[in-house]
Structure formats: C-alpha cells, structure tokens
Amino acid sequence: MKATKGKAKSNPKKPAGIALAAAFKSFMGHLEGSGKARHTVDAYRFDLQSFAEFLEASRSSKSPLDLRGVLRRDLERYHDWLKQAGLKTNTRRRRLMTVRKLMNYLTNRKKLDLDVAKRLPAPEKIERVPETLDLARLRTEVATLDTGSPLARRNLALLGLLMDTGCTVSEAAGLRWSAVDAKAGTVRFYPKGEGAARDLRLSAETLAAFARLRESAGADELCFLGFNRHGPMRVGKRALGITPRGIELLVKSVAGGLGYAKVTPRTLRHSAVVEWFRAGASEEEIQRRLGLRTPYAFRIYAPIFAAIRDGRSKSSSGTTSTA
Image 1 (tube, one colour):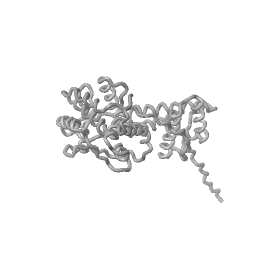
Image 2 (cartoon, rainbow, N blue to C red; image 1 turned 45 degrees about the horizontal axis):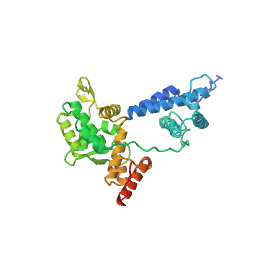
Image 3 (cartoon, one colour; image 1 turned 180 degrees about the vertical axis):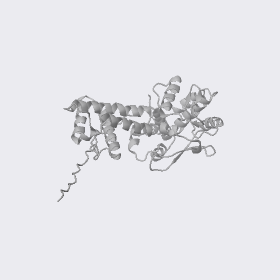
Image 4 (cartoon, rainbow, N blue to C red; image 1 turned 135 degrees about the horizontal axis):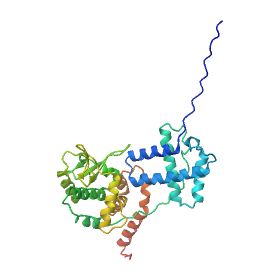
C-alpha cells in the first residue's frame, strides 16, 4: 500500500504586533482627519509622548514597544507614575483620557482584541472658571477694521460669527453658504453625530459682513476660504477653506492688534455664553446653542452664573458692590 501523506497541521496565525510609533501616527492622522484644531492635535501628541516615555522606562527588554502587550495594570501604574512626577490633577486626568481614546480607537479598528483602558478610572476634573471679555466692546473695535479686501471681509464675517454664535473653530471652518439664511437672519450648524441641527441668530452687523462677503463668493460653497500671498486658495476651480488652526491664529492676531492678550476662539465662545445669560437666556437654551448634548461640560460656567445671579440680587436689594 502506498503511504498517504498526512495534512500538515496549520499553526494558528499569531496576531501582528502594534508598534507604538505606528499606532500613534495612525491616531494622529485620525484626529487631523476628523477636523480637530491644531492645538488639540498637538496636545494629544504631547500626552502620548508622555505615555511612550513611561512604557520605555518601565520595560525590561529592548524589543520594539508593542501595544498588544500593554495590560490594565500597566495603565494603572502609568497613573501612579504621573502622580509621582508631581503633575496636577487635571493634567493627569487629561493624559489618562488620551490613552483611553487611543486604546478605544485601536479596538474599534480591530487592532486590539480587548480595550484594556475601558472604564480606566481617572481623577475627577477640577473645573477652572473660563476667561471672558466684553463682547459689546470688542464688536465696536472690530467694526473699525478695514474691509477693503476679500481677506479683510472674510475676517470680519468670521469674527462676527464666532462672537454671535459661540461656535467651534471646526464648525466655522466647515460653514457653507447653504447654511446661512440671510432673510431669517440665522445660521445653521449640523451635528457630527446624533442630534438635531441648531439655528442661531446673527447680529445685524454680522449679517451685513456676510452680505459683503457673499458678493465676491461666486459659486464657492464654503463661506470662509483660506488665503495665501496670491489670494484665495484653490485647487483648479475648487476653493479651499480656512483651517481650524487658521481661525485660531486669526483670532489671536486680530485680538492682539486691538490690545487683547491671549484671546482664543474659546474665549469668544465663553464670552458669548456670559452675554446670553446676562440677556436672560436659560441654561437649557444656552446648552442648545452650544450644541452640548449633556450638561456635563456646561458645569464650568456655574461660578460665573452664580456671580451674575448674586449681582442681580444685590442690585435689586439696593446693595452696591465695588470691584
């Protein structure tokens, strides 16, 4: 009889490792592609560099760092490592949350079988009172800016939008003319995920700035184009919009030129919240205008709202305060 060859047993394929550097690069690309502002992406990168330093310092072998080998206890030790380094509570919390987001990203893309960072405890956030400014005064000063060029007209309309609506830089960068209703005097923002679109009212000055900008927009879909030394940026006939990072730099530059130090788009957002509250808007309405689905992120305004209420109470009782 002929001997029959037996089938060779197939060894289960060992899952490929996940090099730390490759994982970081992929995650950074995901953040940039999702429209995160430049400073936000840089903050994530800085936090992950800290995590890489911890892993490098705590490993025994010289083999390449592989995230598949990271265990839950490693992440808990990372928190202890941050604490021993003397980092403040909010800094430790942010760095742990960044690692959680990285692990969640890799798990969702089937790079990791188990999200070891899921529900990883993080220190309770210590809320800081947001910095705000007087928007009425800023609007008066912004109105004196030059409007003789397309770039200047774009800047004026963009600043007006940020002050009136408190929108994020990503929302402003992606705004299209189809979302601007000049007759109703409103602008519409669409949520990234679930939730309803929200319509916000624009001031007469901002509507006028949008009207001037619209005259030179032609067939462009985006409201706010990016500019270089040659003019509006285009690829063929397609216009390229200003980036979230570009908006951040614009706000800092214009505000700095008007004598306001360290003003960012987030400062304008916080200031819009205070202006709305002083005008009588409810906290629920303000939350809607900001596009916040839960009141968690809204807690930072509690001290400001309390101070405003206290001021109203003293005013109504005839008590004056000196600041």
